[in-house]
Amino acid sequence: TPAPTPAPAPAPAPAPTHAPTQTPTTAPTPTPTLAPTRASTFALTPAPTLAPTPITSRQSENRRRSSGKSNSYDAHKIEVQGRQVLVDGMPVHLKGVAWNPVNKGDIQPSDDFNGNVERDADIMARAGINAVRTYEAITDRAVLDALWARGIWVLNMVYVSGGSNTSSVISKVNAVKDHPSILMWTIGNEWNYNGLYYGLSFQESVSRLQEVAAVIKQQDTVHPVACIYGELGGLQDVAARITDVDVWGVNVYRGKG
Image (cartoon, rainbow, N blue to C red; front, top):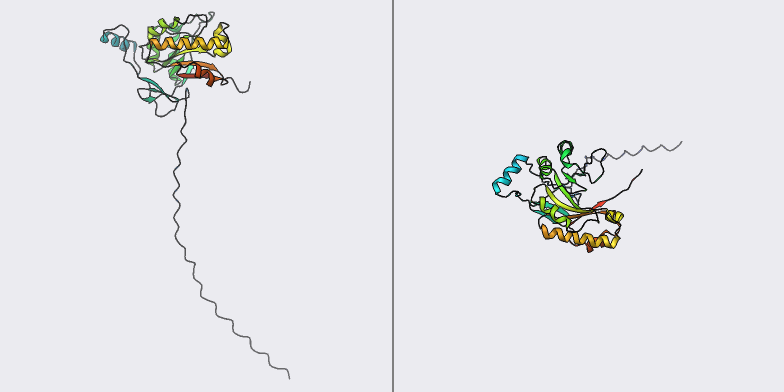
């Protein structure tokens, strides 16, 4: 007779289970990040911005009469600090174009600022433009009044051709240096390419522009002097030699096409 099969041992009772205890977590507080500081020159720091206070031609005339001087205006304090242009202590963000109207059939320097300013200034104001750079000097105050009435600064070219004497800038600067639309004087237009349109050598052009800038500073200590260079090569060396230039503008031709 076979031995009886032992009864199976009872299965152990399962241990009671409990939902795991969850330790409450707190979302980490992100470390605030700071936007990098941007330095700029003609692409100036955009905030805060200072819009010029427009004046009408009548207001302009009233200012001249009330001052007792035929050519007197309220002056702005214009400074260059590092790579910013400040007007009355506030950085200016320039949104500008080169403006030098020549009528159909004419050639430069047959400029017609007066005949085109009302129409062109309206177009520019609607487009949000707040600055113009010229290729010839604007010495007509009515033209400057029309631009300023629409909140447009003027970077006024007073020396473009190496065939002109350095003293030629004196009358141009003194004619309008007290007009509130004037932001700065400009000299030379990508002159390292064109020898100031007069066949000057590079070194001659450098010397000429330093002389011109110095003459401007003798006539006007309020407004900066800007110089327009072609591309970037050699600019630092040139800037170290033309010490009376406060702002450098750069014409760059790149891209497709």
